[in-house]
View 1 (cartoon, rainbow, N blue to C red):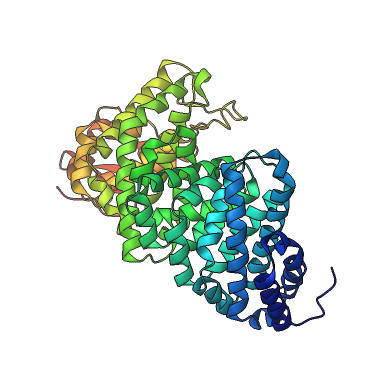
View 2 (cartoon, rainbow, N blue to C red; view 1 turned 120 degrees about the vertical axis):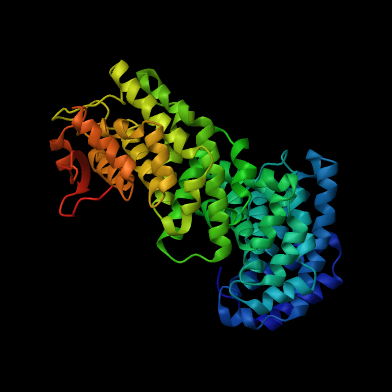
Length: 493
């Protein structure tokens, strides 16, 4: 269609005149051409700036008339009137398309649309359109797609419009269109939700039964539509900033959805660990990790299913692996997550799980067995690759500058267990390095742990060559054996 020959003020005046003087039966015919011309004109920023408030009042009038018509069709489906419904939807779609263009990066028009009351009839129409499941047409698709796009452009960067849309659309409109079969409707709805959300509205969402359902729906979309960026942004940039989000939703998800959430948490934590985080965001992250540590305690033994080759895709065990990865990542940042060192039962469980996996690897040939093949092994892509190495890594993190946890590992028999996992293992890349890291942390300023290792050397359970490879050495002084780091003077008792 060619560019309109009339200016925006002329088109607006013409539309206002036509809509006020026409009967509702003629409205589609008389208004469509003017609206289409305005739709084209509003592609240009200069034209958008020329729109006056009374133009948006004309759209309120038109959409209110169409709302009444659509309501009749949804309550009384009649195939004999489908042509009339099609015309009504066509005009509705064009109105939304025009309004969508009018609000592109134009705060003045956003305010005009909100001030004249366009939000309420728009949301009401969208709700009725959702109920027209019996009427399948491209015009219906265009109507609700353009309506959602209009809402998205209306609220972008406009806090008052966000508040108004949220008040009228939450939660039903979002739930309806996020569960819609049309992918574009889901995309546009996610865009509107993401734009509307802030810390206060996210908390409001999670205090509402349907709001929690909406949060779960967003996660399901992340799993179902991995290319839909808006859904992922809702989780990472809004939900994960809320202290109670994970605690309120995680247990209600299936294991596949939990894995998605854990992957998104890992992305978010990388941002927090890599840059200064504000206090509220860090507090939310700490509370989230305390909750996830409890989830790990509850489900961690499920990973032993991987000792059987028939369970390589067990989803519960896969969540345990993700949880362990996240715990290793966060506890590596002692400054921000040192509180996890005091997480009840965490250290004891990790030591026990290391024992259980080590024992399972000796009972039969499986992913937990030591492999020193020079060629690629059948386990190169196994999900539990490196699991024991990560357990040892986590033990080291939990004991860093923490004498009580150092002692606890010794009391649990963890030192011989870690030393028994110092060899090169193709199933656990870098395990020997993590063992070195952890043994050094366990012996730092801890004479009793040094004595345990010294006695192991004296008894022949551990050899000096292995300790030398770890950067440690045992020396005898005054009839006693002492452990020290190479290059440092021995520690006195």
